Image 1 (cartoon, one colour):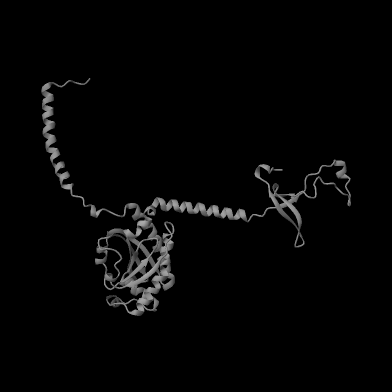
Image 2 (tube, rainbow, N blue to C red):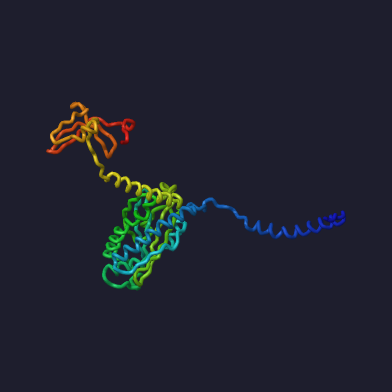
Length: 331
């Protein structure tokens, strides 16, 4: 049975709670005040988590295709992995670029404007050395690129650009084309310096050399396909494509399936005795006028009315009427 507190005990308990509550609340209030800060809407993220995840899936596919392409073209072991997909300002990306470098300005409609591909000097010289049959020289990385080297890199870039179309095909159909190659960021500015961009960093190991391959995607360029940049849409599209493909295969098989087509006169009845006594040369009177069309059956179903004749020394039937479904009967 619960005891009853006296008035004095109740007053003492309330005083204790009040004094303890003040002491305990003050550090929490201080921490809450310290965490509060002004929100700058100019720094709001333009790429949400769904966009980042979708871009990661897309460029994981590209990295796999890119490594296979380099391995086959350069006849060297190559691996490529997406290191990060991050949102930043275009100015921060440009300021972090090394010198010298290779910048490819690429158009990818339906995306707006251009995107930027940055190939690090280490990777660029490794590719050039393999194309010319040598080994990459670390001292070469500090010098600029010659005209011949730029031509070789431009050819390689044009060859692997279709891989972007393959990696994006689950989201949208794109057409890639190389606008130009630049070796200085000031000649390859594709958006305003304060524009938000997504940077996809890919680490590439080519034989004994290692370098980076960075893709700069401005948020402005992705606006036409913004709604499709979600993993839910990506996988739904993939399932829909598989179902559509399976349906197309079934449809093609059905269309190639052979069916027996036969032309038949109207039915004629006769006693069993006459049927048993039929001999060669006997004539059977048919219940079918010469002007009436024959019934053309597909399988065992009557589907058409047709006139019988001969074409190219073979019996033929010319369709004159389509039997509607309600007139067709299984037999």
